[in-house]
Figure 1 (tube, each protein chain N blue to C red):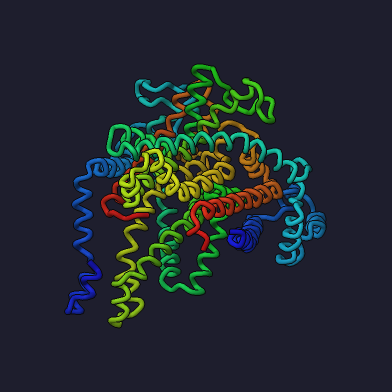
Figure 2: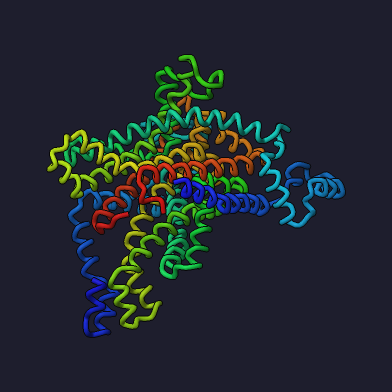
Length: 313
Length: 299
């Protein structure tokens, strides 16, 4: 088990190196360099070139890459062009805010998804199955940013019962006033995981129920409660993998929903950075979010291997 | 099917049957014909496509001409049955014309990713060895990004516009297609009929074209139709962020973005363009489910 975990961790190294190269290449493929963004076009060429030297933009590209990578490895993500604050500091606060949305959204989406999927499978071909399957396919087909807009239109504009934007005072919510800010974005974010998970759980449970060992368990005289336990244990690894993936999407793909609700999270930070052409913030956010996604995937693989020893290849 | 074709005594006939694989596709078609839901969904998509292509026949007003006097008319206004947008343009016209760019940005990236990713995946699965490792390890790097993050990173850094949107989404959809086609090809490669073909002296390219492709293409195509649904949502999402199509183009995501400022004045008009994104993506999802059932493939 430890050997597997170690191998999995070791394999993340080349992947993360590749990620850093890709992000670095993207920044250098962009039209214009950092100095073009920082100084107005009427500035004399000598001053611009002097700045380029100071930023070491005149050095060969691989030297620039390794210098950037070196700073990245010691946790130095650079300084924001716009706010002059370290990118790490800004990103840390924003990630916390994203987590405040992603955690409850994941819990809500996963629980509902497992419940709907399992109930649909156990009542195969009944009206319940049809209703839940329809709910699931609507869940995966809805553009979630649009759901956010519709929820705001209904609950903030028409009924005026919930706030439309922002997170109120900020920080971890403790009062009802702060919790109210969470409701609409969390419901919006939980839709896709709910749909995706329930579709997978339904298909998995149906397949497992059709296998011979389930019949054998029943024939052995096992209580249906115990049979359920065996079924769920068999359905768990692939559901777990999907949940990890979905949680990664909630963290890394929150930009659309955060934009709708003006939520000051990592997605909101990225959106601002794009429109301010704040390259250090943008590249830092992308690299860190990708690293988190890789870490979640490793965690899921290890958990999967714990449940199902066949995975420890 | 293909394995029977290999065992057939007449090589010319065997080749022909392997190329056509007729009996299988005929059965798929029969199953599809009985599936009323999928047929209805395909009908809706065909209608949508017709409306978008022949947009002038389905609309009265110019989608780009507005009037300050007619701003934000509610749904049901005479002459503008879906109301007007924030600069007084007819919303129905804009939704019909907007489908052109939205469908283009939703279908083209998946098609391109299917060509590139399918080729690389089948190659990796069939050849194996070092080539497989090289292709799959590069795929792993792209897999380290949630797809929306990769698309946003590319358009955010390279700049907005239809071309960059298509480029970004194509790159985001290549890795999942490579993975699926590689794993299916690897499975098929070890099946008996491929071994038989190899043993009977068929050239590698022939095996790849007739035996592998015939068995791999179906599942990959089904998977790709389900990706179109995601791609339409993401493409409109990029425009919604201001990273996709640029104003004054009519595009569903961009319309949603422009109408956001009107949310407090007329909330339902503001939410309207999203209905089109939802219906289209739902139809592609249902079609993918129907096709999967008809072809009885497991993914």
